[in-house]
Image 1 (spheres, rainbow, N blue to C red):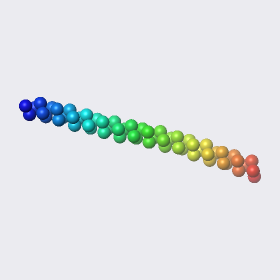
Image 2: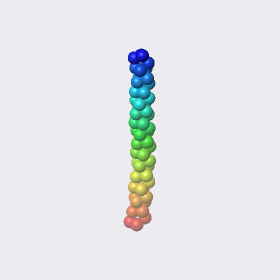
Image 3: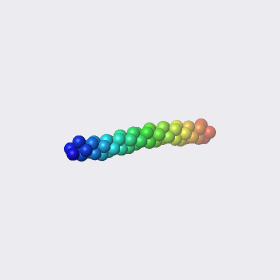
Image 4: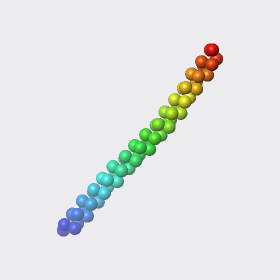
Length: 57
């Protein structure tokens, strides 16, 4: 009886742990993508202002 209950509890805990790990991993992947996109956009904005200053000067 207790072996069955233990197995069910172990499966439930394992599912919860896997769900948390996958959620954290997906969050970190999204965060890395956001950082890369932000750096690219920052570079484009900086380049645009730099070229605009050159044409004015």
